[in-house]
Image (tube, rainbow, N blue to C red; front, top):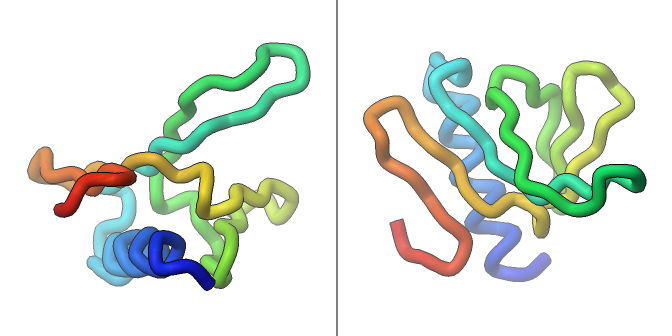
Length: 86
């Protein structure tokens, strides 16, 4: 696993273990065949599992590769952004 995915995974796991995952927003690149590529947001409370390479959402079907996550926003306005130190 690359260091970048490891950092993303740690940030997301911290949000999930905070006791208030509903206060965190994950911003990721969504690749819709009809709409094209766009940034989308999801509430961290929708995450059912975090693997070494992807997030699985609570619908059981949606898998988002970690390399598509570009930002994690916290409850106090703090944010982790890809390529920037927190």
